[in-house]
Length: 307
Ligand code: FAD
Image (cartoon, rainbow, N blue to C red; front, top):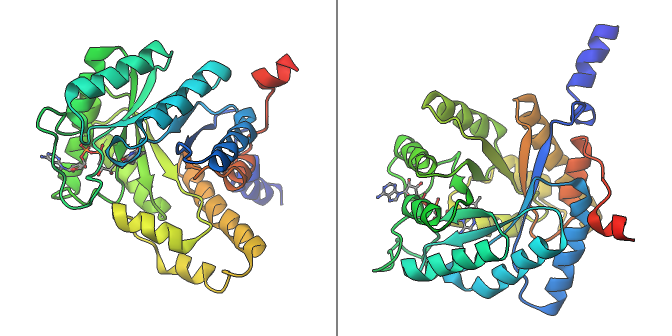
């Protein structure tokens, strides 16, 4: 009957974005080689017509990509109407060095920074630089003193490995927001319920800033395991078993990957989520497919209008 049909429609991601209420952002890493550079820009140009709210570019361990991150972000700022966000960490740099990087971003027209503590490149416990910012709270306050940046910070639905407990992790997030950040982007996760619980706990603790789920579209469990081990994200047994046996079947693996990510996005949408941040790993297809399922359609870009 028509009521059942309406319910089914409401549960479908194909009916999302009816009010144009979905907002997406995409994360890239700065390329190391010419080939990777070409891939990054192909990916960027494929995703750009989806009119993301912003795109962000990561900062390598210990500032190892300082110039490459800057070059990538500055090129986006100069050539696209999509606002770029530059990731910046506290690792192995003095306050003066970090402030200089931030000033150069401001001068290049970059207004959004993703402010992070970072990790020690060699692994092990975090040690702040003697003249540096000790953590992301201090970095946010330092950046605000440089210029009125829009600042995003990191949040951890499954709790950061360095945190004493979930409550202290949440207190830390609140302090980062109180220091001047305007939104949080989460570490990737595979349990939509863990995100929704975290969002609700944060709201109950008085956090009013948006908390945007970070979606990692998985197409290789081995690669995801390496990333998850570093940040304490759990890889559920069902995911391992879903990808089991697909190593030699790339097309099937890609279809399974899209299904997993689409289901997660659908459940987040059903839980009230309207903003999604995609860890693209500099690949467009999976992120594009999920955005399409969420109801996003391409709009004309500055490049199209110039043509
Ligand atoms: P902080 O918020 O400063 O602290 C991390 C955790 O440590 C806190 O959650 C807190 O619970 C705990 N903690 C430890 N000591 C204390 C204390 N004394 N008081 C209070 N709390 C304490 N890394 C990169 O190198 N480059 C990137 O570009 C990058 N981009 C990222 C983007 C996103 C969206 C996310 C989620 C992570 C990213 N990371 C990146 C990883 C990040 O740098 C690490 O997760 C790092 O270990 C913590 O950074 P943070 O900004 O969350 O740190």
